[in-house]
Length: 237
Image 1: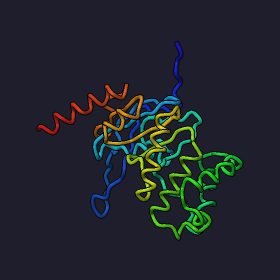
Image 2: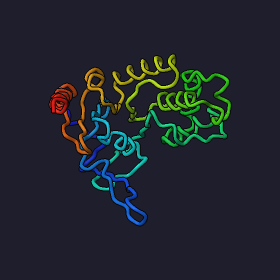
Image 3: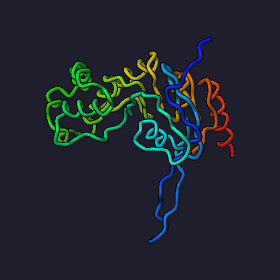
């Protein structure tokens, strides 16, 4: 029997935001209070939860953008990329230069990024705009560049926030199809959504987050059944 070794582990992780309560006082809002689970290489893990459950905050922690305020999050030497993330683009630099910077930030070698550059340009559909400064891009063009960089550079762990398709309608269909193919492959993917059907279709395992706490973890179908039963009861109240 093969024993799987986690590539990323969370143990009783919590994260808070400070809120202004008056001119001289603040209090803490705990977006995450107690989240624990492990991620294994080659699996697709779905994170389910209602709006406000803390899913977006959890993604920022997994991406290394934020650090837990309590508990432990251990990344065993893996590169991660938040696919919806457009932060970090340097406005006066071209799409090509920003693709290079984004790749280096992910810990990918310069030579590897150069090898992938044409694939990034082609997939983005930006054509001659790939050589233009990013400040001339529309929000949809930035989304296409961000998606293409994260998708083509193929980090160890790909983090997908809610919507599988980004950009204009044509690119949405293209990116959604490509994303579903990647999730069904043996790549390590974390998909955050409130759609139980998407996780049932695409994920091996799932974690249910409720009010900042992990309520259930296990095979995707079993966790989705538990989550949907909970939602059904809540809806009747």
